[in-house]
Image 1 (cartoon, helix red, strand yellow):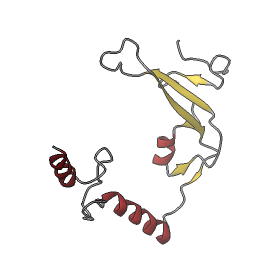
Image 2 (cartoon, rainbow, N blue to C red):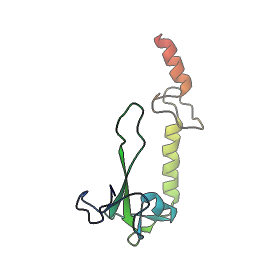
Image 3 (cartoon, helix red, strand yellow):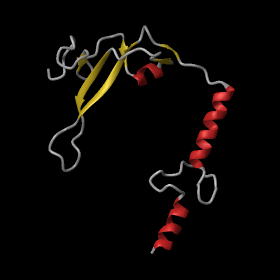
Amino acid sequence: MKFYDPDGTEFGIPTYPRKLAPDGLATRRQLRARGLRPNGQDVAAQILWYGRRPPGERERPIRVAYLYRIDLAAPVRPMTPGRLRAVAAMMRARRTCPDCQVTYDYVIPTSLGCCPGCAGYLVALAA
């Protein structure tokens, strides 16, 4: 198999192809689904696979997912009122247009740098 290296001699850390990782290891998302977090531990292994080939490219990119030991994972920290207020303030800043100061129900696109209404107005001014 292309990405099967349980000793880590070729890739530096134990490496497995998709769906062949041993029990006791999980990705960050799998840990989170169990209510756990990596707890500062180092990566124990990795999964490698070929991703989709981008249009116009000849080679498929190699994708990676890092694995952590489940027995060393810790429970997710509970959301405190202070953290909840901090997250709300951060999200409010992402939803507020810097030009017109209106707070929207959606996150302002970073590609525009302002709300679509202000972006359209700025484009019309430049023309």
